[in-house]
Image (cartoon, rainbow over all chains, first blue to last red; front, side, top):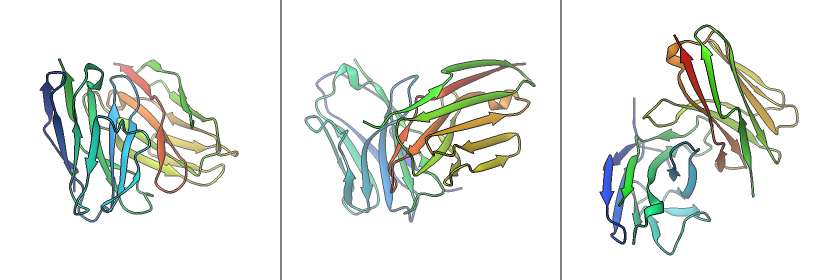
Length: 114
Length: 110
């Protein structure tokens, strides 16, 4: 079964440092999402891509977060500088256009900012 | 903004008992999806409901979408220890934009 690949699996960083996460969606999935999930809460959308274009980044803290999907395939989410409140699970998901079969989530990157 | 709520927040049941979680939206939804997240895992898609009043079944799981398309429920009959996890609803706002609820965490005691 096809999977969404994410790396790293875990990341510990000091506050004010830069950190980056990588995601490779399922082949053929045009739509890619980055979600943040704080422990005990539901996933919150950070950014949505359709191919290489940003569809929705209204909840992305743009002063410190950036995301790109240059060739419409894999994607990178960056935080600079990291803050203590950024500690969370960062989940990448992808779906076919239309999304009727739901999102396929990756295993996520667990970020701890110290 | 768009709000999707779920109750209860936690549910502890004895194995074999039934379980239900409810999802409510402040506005009318285009569709609704349900996901299950095992402890330490990531959300896994279960099902999508689109039509008003729609009911779908997957073995012991029954999903309903309200007539007004503002609420939904997931019912598990005769829970098993493998049902443990957090169940999320995700309300569709149109297109591929979904808002996740906070989830209901299910514990099943053997």
